[in-house]
Amino acid sequence: MTTVDMEVLAEAEAFLATEGPAFRAEFGDRQDFEAARAWQRRLDRGGWVGLNWPTEYGGRALDLATQVAVETAIGEVGAPQIAGFIGVNTVAAALMRWGTAEQKAFLPGIRSADLIFCQGFSEPGAGSDLASLRTRAQKTDEGFILTGQKIWTSHGADGDQCLVLARTTPIADGTRSHKGLSLLLVPLDLPGVTVAPIRQLNGGREFCEVFFDDVRLPSSALVGPLDDGWRAAMSTLAHERAAAMLLSMRTRATVRTAVRSTLADAPPARRDEVLQLYVDAEVLGLLAERSIAEIGAGTVGPAQSVVKFAWSLVDQRYSELLFDLHGPAAAAGLAPAAAEALLFSRSSTIAAGTTEVMRNILAEQVLGLPR
Image 1 (tube, rainbow, N blue to C red):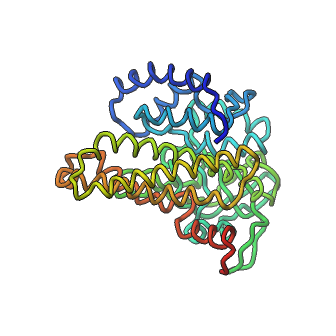
Image 2 (cartoon, helix red, strand yellow):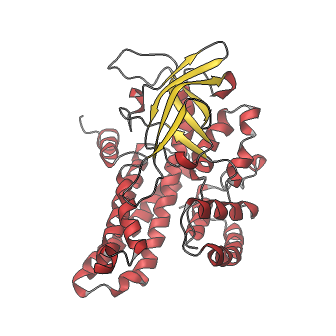
Image 3 (tube, rainbow, N blue to C red):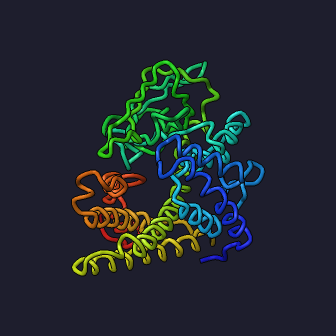
């Protein structure tokens, strides 16, 4: 792993030593959207949002190793993930790389959580296979007319805008192509936009369906080149790799803490499971560290998909074991954190690329196995 800037990490830890207790005094253990937005605003006031953003956009331009170290320290506070995670970690990358001056003006609001973005890529018939998407943006003299549907849109119900990948050049039915796609910024309060929250197992509504019925957009909605949106979209997906590293390091820290506290009281018959989980979480962290070093050296490739794949499995096994060890209390609703973790972890093997897709990538592109 590349060297962590210890001065920056010490500065972050000093900030968190004050702001962490202050936040918990106000919000307790709340993990809801408003608590997450309040936490992001605290972090932004201290300059701890957009850690890898260039300084010209209000970021700290941290290398990935230092970013992960700071994010890990933030995760150990016990506060929720920031409300604008998608905007900060993925959408902003596309705007900084491809956006116009007008579009880049959104960046301060993204950082401060005044502007919440979601990302409209997946569709009912095109989840991890974006080359098959059918949402259509017809070019007009004034701009575009957007028609179609997106699904599993995280934070769509709380979002202000959506970064939509749509087809601006049609293809024949039953075919697939990465060509002819474009990225568009879509305000979610426009006529013709319908956001339908999907009620989840845990009662939350993080995921949504979003319907576009002849939504009229100006030409200024286009992000990057027309019909070359796939290349622009890769600016966001590349940052999802870094996000997987951050999640992995946070999960390792969570498991370490749990092994010292909650899981330490496991009955003898379950201690082998606790030990195996601890070992797997440490291996996950090492895989993430190796990938961080590779990304820092300029090597980005399909082999890093193993981190997301491993994280999905470790996250689910941790939540299952935590729930089991709480026993009847968890089933009776007396251990809400354990129940929440179990129910939400069902999405871990779906979000940001399903486990099945990750297996295919590793098998075909890394191991060279036949399709």
